[in-house]
Structures are given as structure tokens and as C-alpha cells.
Length: 63
Image 1 (cartoon, rainbow, N blue to C red):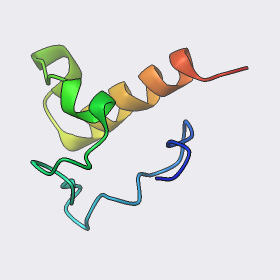
Image 2 (cartoon, helix red, strand yellow; image 1 turned 135 degrees about the vertical axis):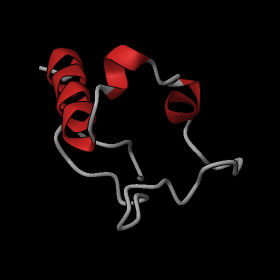
Image 3 (cartoon, one colour; image 1 turned 180 degrees about the horizontal axis):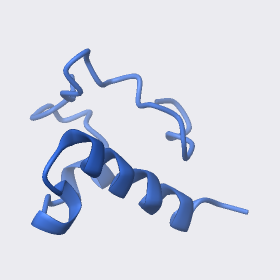
């Protein structure tokens, strides 16, 4: 996303199944490539994983 992805905004590179369209491509942002999934992050469901990511975004939001 030009200028970066704001917190709370869905990445435009996610497809309908929440898969990254840039995965494995050189234009994938470094922050995404460096994010290593862990059990704590993924939880037991997609809803838990999304809640974890939303919390990370709140904690790291500018302002």
C-alpha cells in the first residue's frame, strides 16, 4: 500500500481467503516478510488470529 498500511485498515493485498497476494515476491513489505507466526499469534481460529493482529495494530499505532 503506498505510504504504508494504516492501523485498522485491511491490507489491499489480501485475497478473499486472507492470503497475501505478494507472498514470496520481492515487493512484499519487509515488515510482513519479517513477521513470523507463533502459536500465541495464531490462536485456535482465524478470529483469534485477527484479534491478535488488531491488538498489535492498536499498540503500535502512531499518535
